[in-house]
Length: 481
Image (cartoon, rainbow, N blue to C red):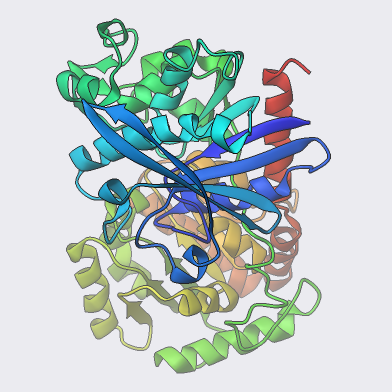
């Protein structure tokens, strides 16, 4: 039996701000239980849902020294969907209304959490072969495993994996502060270790000392070795390229299932979508006050409204797009200029554009189930989950070829009749518009071809089981099996 420990700052269903939580909550239950005992450690935040806190059982507590202060470490435990979760309790650090606050406070908090997560292991009597760390918040764990936790019999030969979910966030602050909080000696604060551009960088520490590095798609693993995507760490990632691999995220095929989805009015599957999907479309058109017409192509967007997601491209061609005989449905919040841009076009083209500037789980599912196409023109996208949901619901993705979008959406090839969506290469508004026009032409004039694209999209498998097998292979490689 191989023991794997996931350490992360968030995890569904307990606490979630982004895709990281989905990965940490979904992967462990997909590993083959005959060979892998995978457990998870996260902080016990005060803002967690009460229903879960009530079910946690108290295990033990002790104190650790940090920056000349004695800090309480409480351990709680709970089994959920066959996986054991440990929660590190400390009300001084984890009592905020949200899991993250200002960066300096977060740095101190997650240095404490990294030390505590390793310190509880002998107490709970779980000795992992591999500690799998997620993002900068756990970046010091691989460092600690080579430093103070290296000596004892219990921690000897423990391997670490560092997974980058988004390289933009690195946990950087001045050397003096991070040295004081972490208790690490001067030896670790040099340019070949934790120091980066005169500051200390927690993610860099993890990338230098981890035994293996993963990120959330194969293309992103290649992109981050280049200057444009590398966020100043491309040199290090290039140097470690033999230990770096990309494994694409999955989605929960129970939560996102058009046959059983509680949020949609008309359930459907790969056999009957031609009839049933249209009923969802008409229901949504009516709900949002758009012209009710099943023949009108409907494009959906569910996203944070930010530059990273390609909204400057959309803003540039939105007027031209609205000259076409189609409808655009938007759901999300973000930068004010994009929120207002969509409100403006909703006002200007009222029967064509529906701007929903808020977030609703229910409406997001309805958009996936009702739209004909789904637009996602990101500047960069480590993995992306929306395109996987769109494929699952037979809503044809139109994406830019970057990161996980390139790995998961196969561009339509009319000569070979292959592909699950449409894509464009350059970050260019009119290249995107031409791709939308091409998709529109296929939708309107070659409906049998369009339906074949949907058939292939709905047959694609991006469930967590596929990702889990790839992680298992990596663990075996790391442990020399």
